[in-house]
Length: 136
Ligand SMILES: [Zn+2]
Image 1: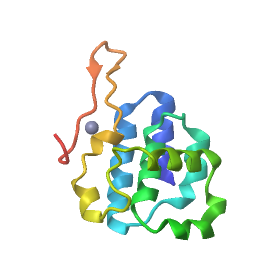
Image 2: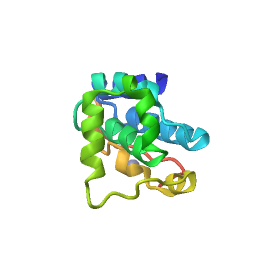
Image 3: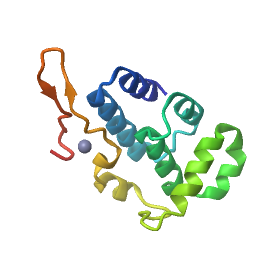
């Protein structure tokens, strides 16, 4: 949850690098535990814009990490917007797969969840997100 709060802070303050670092950490933890962060759905969907890449990430993690039948027992964790995003994502013809594996997630380009916006600093220089070892 703390990582999602850091993302929201970075979003509110216009710090793409912080958002991207939070996304990288969320994905890294997701791959390690192979557990969807179900308890973050309300917070993320109540504190981000419709176009938020964190929303997209949560929906992809939910759709691709397990059995959707199990979602019935966790219905109180989901918001309407989350469920609408799930349905919209499911019907996209270019969706990667219905269920993937840790290995597939680990080899995926994280840039689809990154904000590559250049930010002009107070000094006037342009600061773009620097990738780590994953995709430099
Ligand atoms: Zn990137």
